[in-house]
Image (cartoon, rainbow over all chains, first blue to last red; front, side, top):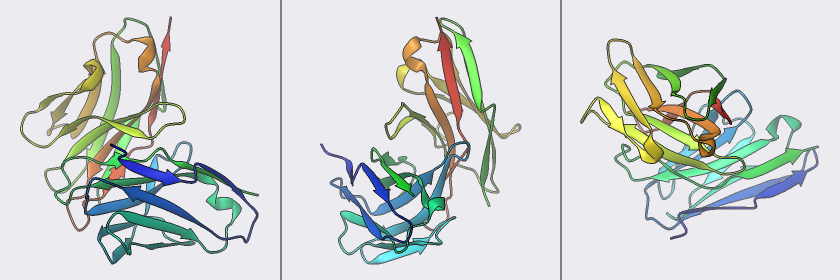
Length: 113
Length: 114
């Protein structure tokens, strides 16, 4: 079982560049999430989706966009990267009931210089 | 809004000693509570979860947590620490509103000394 797969695993961007992070899950989960992890701050929710074609803003959405065109994929886009977006990004998914906990990907380490 | 407070960003114990990681939550409704562990350069792995079936919850790797409503706490314990327990631990509460979002604490790094 692949679970949740994130690509790429590492990336270095220059300020102003754009990129897309891909999250793919093979568990037929309805709900998917993008979090960022920064030292001493835990994980903060960027955007989430409760189903194909639907997205919603989380706690820290500014500077990011998302799309959920297929149920198994959830894309996170940075239109114009800033050094403040240097972070580790995690994707997660769960069944719709929510009390199963999340399945996490292994993360994408992004550095913006 | 729900929130989670983890007391102590770093905890150090000797191998074989009791592990106690503290978590307090704020929620206006009966919560779902979770503990996750993160090993270096990896994603988060579910340790255990409270979903109102029992106040004492047993998880993987010998960890357990007790839900205390009166104290709004969900502390994580393990009777005897092992070197392999060294990791970062996150407590989280589920937002039962739209989207079932998890709200995480800031994390506690556990160091195990030989």
